[in-house]
Amino acid sequence: MTLKKKVLCIVLACLIILVGSGAVYGFSILHGIAGEQLDESDLNINDLLSDDVANIAMFGIDGRDDVEGDRSDTIMIASINFKTGAIKVTSVMRDLLVKIPEGSKNDVSYEKINAAYDYGGPQLAVKTLNENFDLNISDYVVVNFDCLVDTVDTLGGVDVNIENEDVLYWTNEFINHVNSVLNKSDPKIPGIGTQHLTGVQALAYCRNRFSDDDYKRTARQREVVQQIVQKALNVDLFTGINLLGKVYPYVKTSLSLQEMTTYAKAFMTVENKTFTDYRIPLDDLSFGEMIDEVWYLVPNSLADNAVMLHKFLYESESYTPTANLLKISERVAGIAGSGSGGVTVDEDAPYQKYSNSNENDSTEPTPSTDNSYNSSGNNSYNNSDNSSDNSDYTPPSEDYTPSDDSSTSGAPDDSSGSVE
Image 1 (spheres, rainbow, N blue to C red):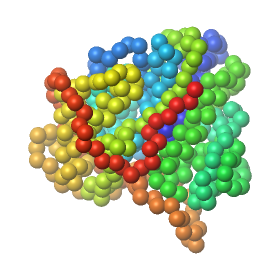
Image 2 (image 1 turned 90 degrees about the horizontal axis):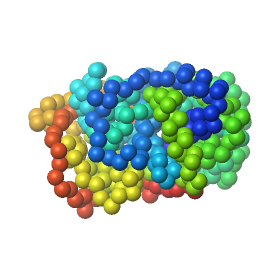
Image 3 (image 1 turned 180 degrees about the vertical axis):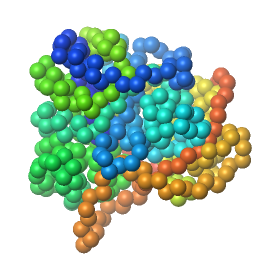
């Protein structure tokens, strides 16, 4: 899970804890984080799923003024099991090639999933998750990640493992940038190995995308977020109120006070709470590919990934994708095979070559570099550039068996893990 994803989890945990405690101050704050309400009739909600699990979309937005656009830099699904008390957080890789449904500012297209938020805000972003994974999400939380610094500092910092000199060098470069933007003066990290990080250092550690690839970056983010979530779940009321008071200006949600109270009561009555994270797409069900000079993370089968996601969320032995998802999955595979991504055309029309606009999709700051420094890390995962492409809808579904055809992405196997 990425750092930003972790921050989302932390904020959600704090909201649940504070509401569950019945803090009056918390109630007044919660009224200030009310965001855009969603039109549930236009979310493509899967009504056949169990009500025992509540799924909430979480979007991380980078609040720096030097970044254009509103693409969600982090996309997560937080799932709360009312029976077991389990919190499961699924990271959805932002470069994943999916169908973006029609919205107020866009036609139907096939492109990177993080474009959905840019085109239609939370409404279209939630609809995109539901349609591509057969989910029933109807609420969201949006967090501006500038709140990470205060979050980590309020919780007393986090301990991480600086793996090598490349990670150390580039993290310290990002520390310079974060200090400059936030008018802070936190010191650089002194060396490799286990280090206790401040808020500025932790944010830089999570934003570092130059020492290696995006898989390593998301692993660093998971490392930080898991610690934050565990600390947030165990804070006292005073610390919880203090933390929420600092981060609430950076948070918007469609969840009502009543809904949060319901979630809080259901969750806090369970003794053995667990936090488990997951990542979509799975390593052995996806691969990276350049399409029209744009890097995409392509699912071997979007339907197979959805089946695995449902098994994780609902702990079921099997799931049968809808006919609509099967059609989307086939279309995604066809686009990857044709080498034409980001195409906005009629669903049944022939594939068309797309002229890339070279729009800058990077939501990470570019630190000043020392030209004499030659990083040995192979940054083969290119997050720059997004475009747009197309498809449409279909009917119910028949029996479905996940295909055995899978190719590995070559990325490290860090798609899941749990913390008791």
